[in-house]
Image (cartoon, rainbow, N blue to C red; front, side, top):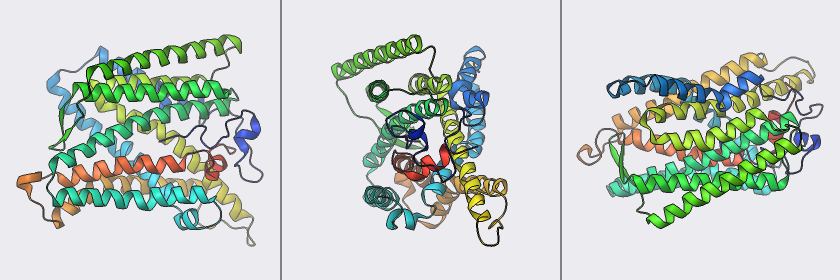
Length: 394
């Protein structure tokens, strides 16, 4: 999830900021959490620390990593893949109105058109071109672009979770504090990406190679120094805020921010931790999406109750939410496994050049890259749906 600055909450603090996009009769939640403080802690990042500690204490032998990978692949069906699918479900719901109607402002409608139409067409054209030209190097660089965007995606989600929690807890950051948090997130992300390119020059994904950029060592060292400096500034700001405002820091949000930027980005160099980090990231995303969807279904039920006959249009909010989850599971499976298998069975390619996993490679990269652009529109400040459904009454 590419959470924009305040998840549709204006930069200023105060209760009005949190409810500016709410539905009539709905106000910002006063519970201070998305579901429950303990649930929020585990799902937003605290649970991953426990998992990492257990993995470090009871690290399986290297020959058992394949078993762990198989287990995480099963988890991916339930967590990782639905998290991508849900972004498609929400983004393309009533897409005609979002992109061409009058409900959204012109700039937001343009963003919907770019992310929803232009980006997938551009990705399709790119992959079609490199496959027709049999340019394996260009195909491999697409993975590097994916990892570049995934890192950005991670840190913006961690920052967004902190801001969401601060709004729910009424423990706001001022404009300068948010700037420090956001700049630090970007610096940590860039440093991590540069270190990865500096240390790894060739890697395989689904049997196809991807390539990194040959960065000069002094540039990487400068990035590391900036990362250390911005981290120190962020920690100093947090400590001052803690002491000056009587412990007014949203704990679960702070955990989400720190775990995302440091534990998840830095530990992904370890192949064991790398197997579980995507699931932790997806669970963090799902917590927000599920709260958003539950509120949307309740809002829909309320609107149905106000119609002439007073009857719900189709099922209860819980039943429709269950349907949303089921569609996410099916859509996730289709995007990551079903569609690649269908393409492999119907589209002839030279397996002597690409091997048997070309379409797995293309579909996984396509969805990861497109997901970034979808989230960049869905969760940005100014999107009325976010304020309406994320901060509404429980």
